[in-house]
Image (cartoon, rainbow, N blue to C red; front, side, top):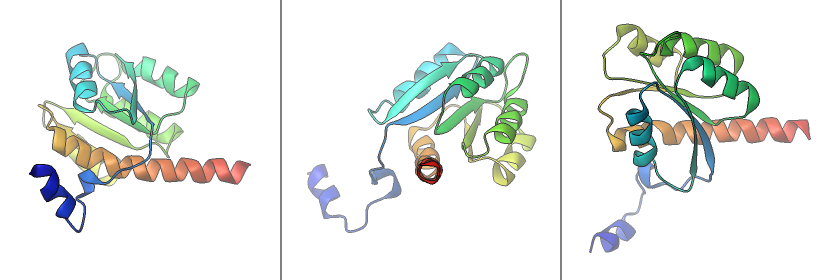
Length: 152
């Protein structure tokens, strides 16, 4: 019955719109449980995750590989998520960045609306996370295909 109802919708919801993948997502969080949770929440064939447990490792991964999206925690040792996100944005401005935290941060909230692709509050809500990342992935992929086509 549920499938029947979904087929009868004339206009698909944004979260139901199929977007081509696979999308390479860099997930940065010092908490292994959070990394496992996010990868389980977003477990789909279209998402390929590379995990980093700290920001310095993530910057190194960014130098070596291309990514369509970065999801980063704000509170991490050595280099916090905001400092990491600022550095990543300066070096790779075409990659959208989603900030996540279990702690409300006025700075992060302000940066989110001015600079970054989104902010997700922990505990993570699956529907909200998908609603934030899907349009960013579509935009990121369009930019990267444009960059690839212009260089060939």
